[in-house]
Length: 124
Image (cartoon, rainbow, N blue to C red; front, top):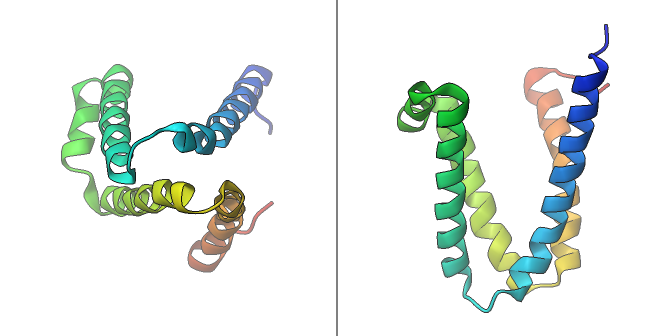
């Protein structure tokens, strides 16, 4: 029926942590005195390294194999993520944070609409 109380609490804590981390990204990005490509390079390097470490810790060497052979779904996710980051960082530096925040706020609604259109999955 429902999730155990400890899993629900952990889920809520993780969502709150993610919201705090994402909401501070524009602030810290605007503080950096670097061009967008430098920020993207270092962000990608650190993110890729941490994801690799996380995969090894969670799944052992088999997790790294998923990075080497991601499959069609993995390539789609990686491509969309790359386009998002290449758009996000320059947008923060070239326009007001408010404009970027409004676009980011639409993401859950766009995801729900795509899930409904492509997968027939209705939001509860």
